[in-house]
Length: 59
Image (tube, rainbow, N blue to C red; front, top):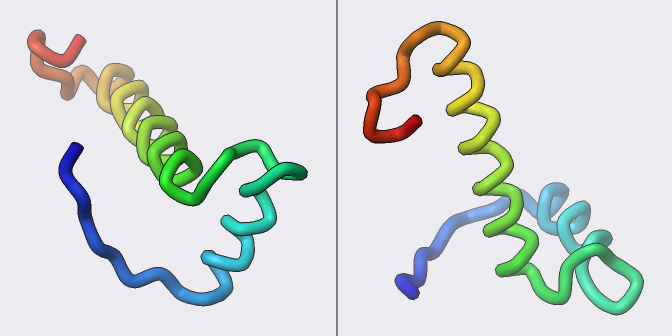
């Protein structure tokens, strides 16, 4: 799996960390970030589909 590096404001990192760990929804930051990316991309695909902007290969 490729690795990427991003800069994240401390406020977002603090919020992210509140959802990670034994008491959180995710086991680690990477899982939380991957889930967020998937959810965002799915939402964008839905918006594009409503506006007939999706290519056939992505549907």
